[in-house]
Length: 297
Image 1 (cartoon, rainbow, N blue to C red):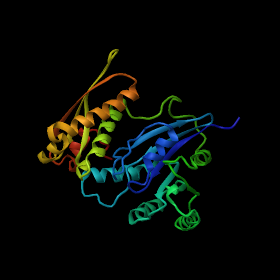
Image 2 (tube, helix red, strand yellow):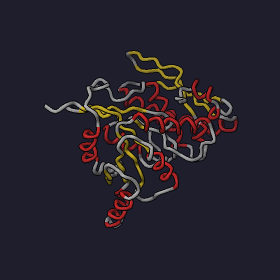
Image 3 (cartoon, rainbow, N blue to C red):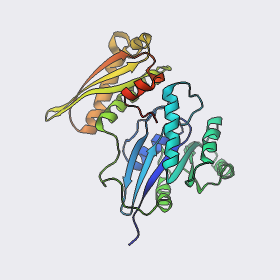
Image 4 (cartoon, rainbow, N blue to C red):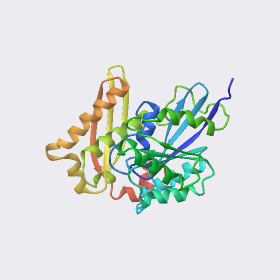
């Protein structure tokens, strides 16, 4: 009988390359919210994948980015850096269609990483003609001493089986760290707040999503259903009107979309109340970040 293997797999990369999409795909469920906007992931989230002979603990991290002018951005960069220090294996996710200076920044951080690194060229479904992929693989192989270089499409589920078969050999022999039926280390309240923030981010097409945070203040489960009260925090009074929308239209739509998804996940009727409040410049205050549930390493 083969030994059981268990370890931490940090998923890193610049913002918006598909890290959370990848984790949701290999988990077969939504663990992290996903939008097309950079910096959607703000927290370190564990996704636990348990099979017969291994337990893979994916660490979904905020994208490493250059612009760290606020306390929240600096905290997000530190979270990603800390995940590298604790990892048994690193998955470096890149967008095969575009290499940027921020990719170079992440690569430089990997130079000091003790763990083996697998480079993932994501979004290969967008490469045409396919011969270009061979060039991309060759160029990536020359950038660093990677343990493997693997082309994937997280969205289309291409080559993910190969990746999952490859990961256990890099993990230490160890008993599982989490129960087999556990999928994430985050609470249902946390995921509720994240779903609301996802719907807000998708509805608001300006810079505003980066000044938004959501905090669940009340979560009551009864036989008849679940009652949730949540506060949407903004940084300025002018942002409050944008979130509420004309005649309350934006807030109503966000509330309806969030309620439907939360209800589907909980398999219960949900009553959701949303409030919009101002906390001036919360994203640049470590004290406010901690009070809103952010990890501040």
